[in-house]
Length: 279
Image (tube, rainbow, N blue to C red; front, side, top):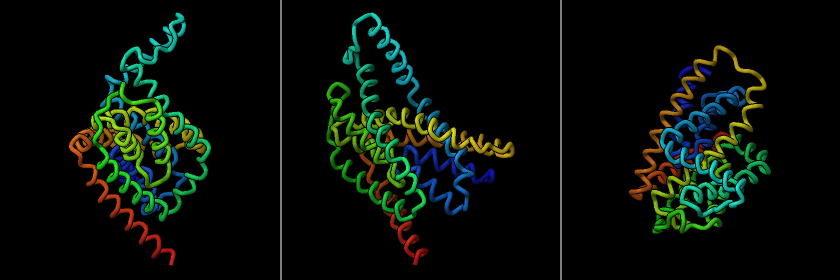
């Protein structure tokens, strides 16, 4: 992998992880057209996830800090016999909602990992996933009339959003698009929908790093690749930060439909290309 390729992949990962256009689909397409061997890019992909994780921390560091402090308070309450006290404050309830949303993603991801992995080698599957993403964005934008906050949303809604996130394990289906759509379908306020969607991605990204890292680094990383790896992580972090800030404005202004047009065009082009190359 060249230095330029690592920068391009890092830029694509950071943008497409948070813009609703599917990071997995775009990375798979770039790897295909660059002719990069999938085994060679495993370690790099795991580290790119680390870059997008940094992006979330930089944007939501106050919320993440408050959640960690509240987690400590939960343990204190348990040990002192006061119980979980789920509704003790907004931050604590939000933390439990994040946990509930993570459960279906973890279960489905572990059970169907091989199935989803196999789809990454299919251009047609990626194209179909992008078309689905566009449809989901359009429907969620039309349904976005809710004004619910953390106390108005039930844990069943959090579980539903977690299922939406697990669907995004399919290449071409955007994780941010699916979770924001699920949040809007659940009646959340636009600003809260974006914040919740990105906060629940933290456990999923950490889980992906933990699962991918042993296999990715098992074959070793060449020393010559380290500068390219570092550049890719930095670019992924910066582009991810920009993408999160952009999504906050886009969702607040009701402009998700613009991304639908993009995913439909790219998805259709990929399917046509796949049909031509197979014929």
